[in-house]
Amino acid sequence: MSILILNAVSHADCPYDELLGDLGEELILLTDRRYVDGYPRQKYAYIEAFDSYDVNSNVELRAIELYETYQYHTVIALKEMDILRAASIRDWFDLQGQRTDSAEQYRDKVRMKEVAGDNGIPVTKFRRIHSSFDLIQFVKEYEFPVVIKPVLGRGSTGTCVLEDKTALSQFIEKGVPLEIAVEKFVEGEVYHVDGIVQEGKLEFISASKYYDAPLHFHTTSYQGAYLLTPTSRIAERLVEMTKKLLASLATPDFTTFHAEWFHTPDDQIILVEIASRTGGGRIAQMNEHAFGANLLEASLRLQCGKSVPVPSLEKQKHPDILAAWMILPPHKGTLRSLPTGQPPDFVVEYKSVGKIGQNYNDPVSQVDHIASFVVEGENEEILQERAQAAYEWFHQSTTWD
Image 1 (cartoon, rainbow, N blue to C red):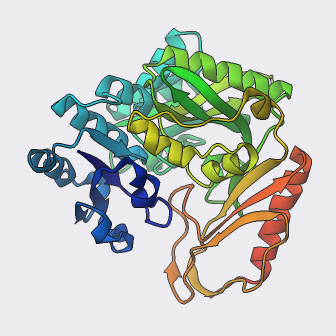
Image 2 (image 1 turned 30 degrees about the vertical axis):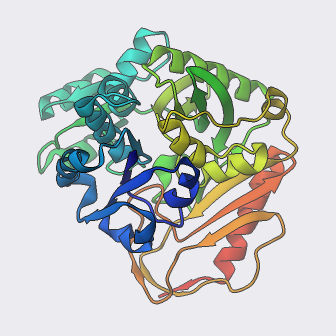
């Protein structure tokens, strides 16, 4: 018996051989070439690497060909670009797990909002764009500003705000890209809600507030979020809205999820989007520290149809400590130094992935980073202060050309 893994993360971030070792299954790994060297080949039945992994359809071709040899019964996908791939492979061989209809509802941002809106979930005005006429007509109807995003986008890559006619003209100058959507810009703070569904039941859920909107990753010093006090009014509203959204969509019986919401100045909660996967950054580590819920490991085992332990309802409502996560993006230039000492005591996880002497460009995605932190604190105010303090500790010892 074997498991097919579609992989676009490093071994350090997800050691499948360790996390799934107790299942006694052969592991077949199809991976982005950038990460292949970190995986111990002796612990995998088969490993194959691909250039241009995100768009390389040879991944699907090899998955089909390898089935004849390995007869895998499960397909694992952790990253957004692999969700539909994995679902299509499951369809092809009639395997357990999330199928294409469910995957499309969680990946296609237009279809997602259509289903959500039809079920009473507040969504902004939106439209799938097929030509410049569609975009121009939308602007005439709803005025600037508007947000352009790929229908199957991830990590804010390819997302931009058009503030006025000049920005619109510049955007359409080279033609309108395929598979994009336009939305009316929503003013407000952004939150994320994460959790676990198993055997068709919501078993764990937590609500967090972003320090700044993910769309601003180009202009902020760090990206991240802090857990809300679970019994606060805003946390309870976000949880209830997410429960309603999960019930509206074709939610898999076994999955983790990551939902994002706007909270507007006039106190509305409006859907940004939802994904049938564990959120990026250090969301999994933040929740593990506060609640003991390992969302990354849960995602792997849930996709194998295995149940996972979850915190008690009492723990979910009243954790002993709250936590926050943050990632620090690179600057354009050459990295010359990094901190050598220990971070402040309230930092419970610190990872530096920047390489001294390497040239970097500005981030192209909200998850591009050279370092990350998880910090703990007794309340939301302390978490905000400690995130800033962790950033300043890192910034003071980091230099760029």
